[in-house]
Length: 61
Image (cartoon, rainbow, N blue to C red; front, side, top):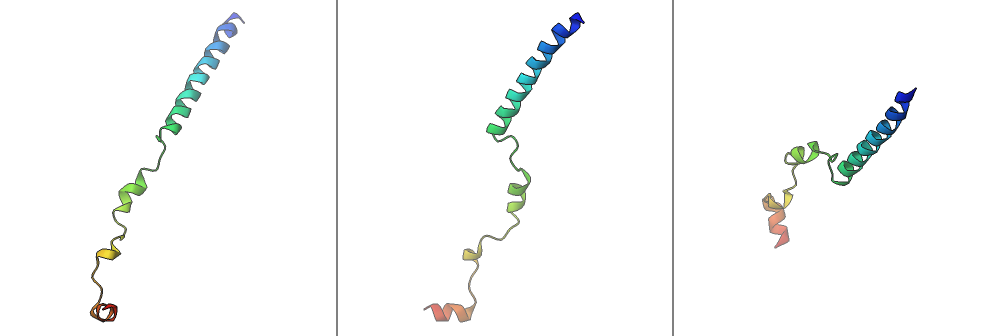
């Protein structure tokens, strides 16, 4: 029964440390999405660089 006097405070201390580390990691963006930026390069977002067809170019002038 005396061991509980040691284990309960030790458990609470480790729980507090784990909670602080989790809070720190969330605040610093450690759980941000890492897959989307890698896949974003595959999306076409350069429509302004693609030349317009001849018909649309003549109408704009």
